[in-house]
Image (cartoon, rainbow, N blue to C red; front, side):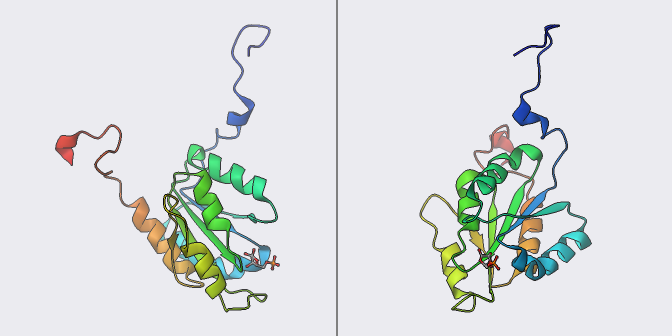
Length: 168
Ligand code: RP5
């Protein structure tokens, strides 16, 4: 694709990636989950870690979840925290669309019949090959601390592309 003058046009889908994204992306399944995530935001703010929070439901808006998850790494996001209550599919769906580490936060909800155990099981019981880390019910601060620890691991691991074996 070219302009009449012959210079290439940027791919429309990539234009939005010009602004660097934050290091941590936080997704919540509902506006009603927001308050429970305040400790995570506070922890990330205290540590000076850039972050963003989006309300995206795996069940009510699955396309938006897929788009967010599949483009997050391109924007510079390095860890995703996904929090939801009830049939908490959000962390697992996010993990299905990205290679970034995903930390799930099971939440209690006014509509929960099991006080958050429902969401805990939904997040933990991922099939082999699609891992999601999981903190305690309503453990949003721990999710932020774990995200910070993951971000602190800059050294790579055996098999990291571009890292000479001699340095391992
Ligand atoms: C989940 O259902 C959300 O994460 C929330 O915890 C729960 C209830 O959502 P609302 O009906 O309050 O939007 O998907």
